[in-house]
Length: 150
Image 1 (cartoon, rainbow, N blue to C red):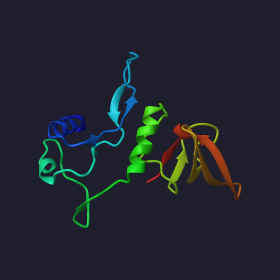
Image 2 (image 1 turned 90 degrees about the horizontal axis):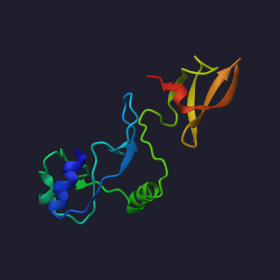
Image 3 (image 1 turned 90 degrees about the vertical axis):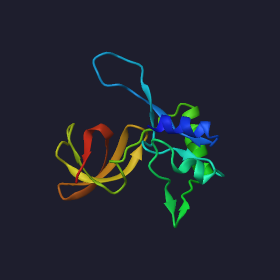
């Protein structure tokens, strides 16, 4: 959907940005990762643009706005995303894991322990605060070993 929107916008001469990251396909065979939008459902438009040109783009639902004006993302934020992508730094969207949420350990020696997510360390580690034997402790753990609690 996002790719089709960017193609239509390009034909209308609207500058846009669709950050994509390689995502491995599921299945038995090893296949090349496919480029997937980092932020599904979002295409970033570079102002100035003609609102009439973008208002009714096929595949697009609406333009995010704030107080009746199109919302804006600081250029330095988008430049940072572009720089990470250009240099091959791993970027991964994870809506479930945010600071302060309650999590439960589902793998490894601490299975069943619950705590609060307090820090990310690199791309595959995180730190949770928990209570063990009546004492508050911080534990560094593999991010794939936890699940968010509802």
